Image 1 (cartoon, rainbow, N blue to C red):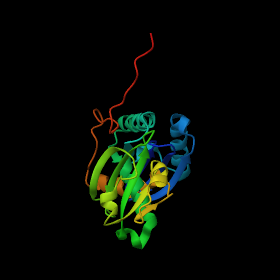
Image 2 (cartoon, rainbow, N blue to C red):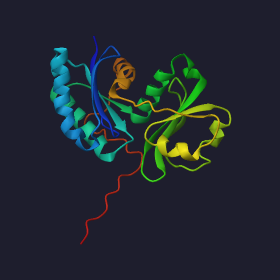
Image 3 (cartoon, rainbow, N blue to C red):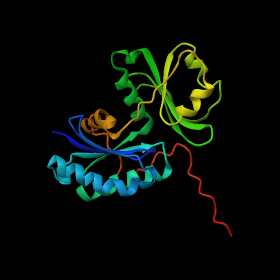
Length: 227
């Protein structure tokens, strides 16, 4: 039995999930973006108690590594690394854009192979963090930061039906009028990490606990203090 704790605090919704052998068992969600830190530890304890297991029984801990909210990424990774260090468990990191994409792929069901998938995370103004995947999560366009305009993605939309999703897609929808563009309101959660986390555990694809950092995609900028 492979029991994995999954943590996602990369975007406006925080969530955690317990999965067994790649299948979600229990999950909990917080809609309060400002309180990701205070949500995590009590929620983790609640799930472990409800499932009747100790943290020491976990086989690994998985966390969304980014891109996403700078603060949210630090909160999630710090919590995951702290637990892994204390429990001597392996750490699995998963790209947030992949998690968003797989949530939409699952919702598409039998028609999933008819589309390409463009997850988008709002990066303020008209910028998003985004990538393009097929229904097997093969990378068509690697994660990048993109300034949106009405011509964004026209080359891929020319020949493919594309499903846009995530917080960034909300600001692209009003300026995209292409008939191949579809907009999904599916909200990803930590349970969408289950299969990816289990595969990583099976393949022993673990992050370096001492040196792994959030995947910001863009350099974090902190303005100098005012004199």
